[in-house]
Length: 349
Image (tube, rainbow, N blue to C red):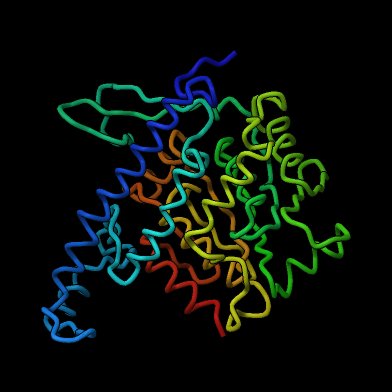
């Protein structure tokens, strides 16, 4: 049997402390990056409306990372950067984290270790020749040959519970957004399964199709995890149904209805997004993908995921989430605000 720190419910206090640390780090990120940017571009006001000066707008534009690769092969990206016009979105998206009890933030068997720093290896923190490395046990689990397909939408608490399980198991999922007013995926579920109920899972590796979030979670743990009996009771029971529902309230149903100006048909190929469920930066990208009904392969990179090193290597030493790859246009980019702008420009009428 596996032994690892921060195991699911063995140390609930440690889980709460870890969630608190994540919340504090997000708050620190907002105060250290977004708020100064807001202050630098604001004028003393003489009315309820104020207009930034031309020079301050140029400064803001110059400071805003594009998220794209530069001529040197690196990426123009800033970790924890919040574009001033998206501060409210990111703040509200982060408010639900405590209510999720940390689900979606950590891979199964999460733990940390202090090791000698090795050049070229990703670490959450490096100092004085040492590196703080995040670990998990997901590499020991069976991996699906093809991505599991999940029909769901961002504002559904039952769907959120399945996403939490996928993050714990470090599974890559082909999401088929099925928001209200969906023209493709929601009708498919009704035709295939007989009812408009979500989430709906299709596993091309086994031919299994099913409704019911608790059944899907147990199935994933049985086939791609440590065993069905190890599925967290908090996820399969009603506790996290309420937790997930309350965690979605700050975003007021974002990602639950298809945008009126979204394209009628999805792109020829699914886009690929590297992200993780607990990240507010990743959440706003998922909301846009759902509202545009854009199919996407979600490469889960929860804390402890081995894919963080893969992304670090692939991007020449940048490990930041989310990261988008769109084979339809050849676009690759970081920065959540820029990704959302790109998606809306590319996949709207």
